[in-house]
Length: 323
Image 1 (tube, one colour):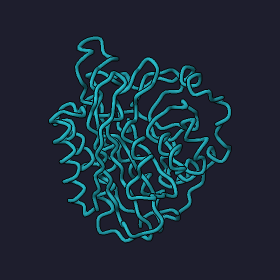
Image 2: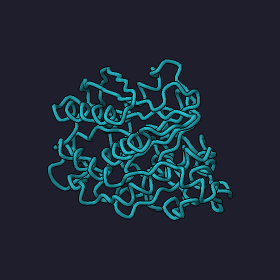
Image 3: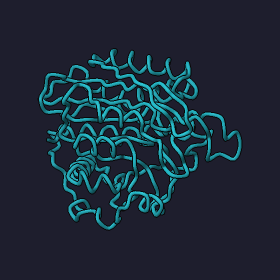
Image 4: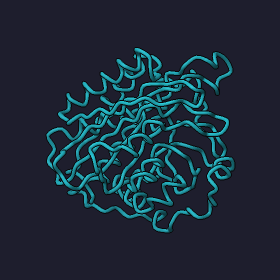
């Protein structure tokens, strides 16, 4: 996840009037779309497997582009995707970081039901920040990023598992973005290099999805997922679907209607460059604060909740099967 810019600074940089992306009234009174019988048809999100993914991800160490840990973790993600019978594509390139380094970029795209015309895009970044700039010590050392990186990976892989052998009339594309977190905290530049590259050079070619969800820091104990500014502006109808799905599961309290940001995250570059409406599920408090472990060496599995991962993943599945 990119820099710790306050809401005011992000607004100034983006030139956006925050009031333009206010929530619509429907989100506050979202009603379930499904009957209890229909809810039972939705695949089950396995939170125990998701928690296993968290620990496996963390065990590789800091997954900074250009390191052996990064290479091994990418190979592991692909092996897990193939384990769940997805069709896997890789996109590789190089990118220049804000501090002048050239790094390898490896985006991983997994397709579920690849022949379906109707598609939905779910994404998360899988790399880690190369320095702990928000920590009080060891600021120049890379972080594990178990929530900021690992939690999104856990949600995507577990959705792949849930969809194995499930018949549907739609397809899901799981995008694991690389090189998201090597940006400049002072001005917010240099983040999301992998998703920006893919959005300008999509694979498969001429890719289109009805809408998408990006997951960033979605596993911490006590997390809730409010409305992000750019998401609401560009994809308000997706929030409506999300809140209705949460209501069907009686989990609406995890998706409050207060606003955060706007935040430039991977979803922003996808929408700007492809036109795919996409929302960003990310935890931030009402006063614009990320979790205290953010961009520190304390971002570890200690603070991850399998129950929060379950809420995020099961609500997503409920939403997709409620079309």
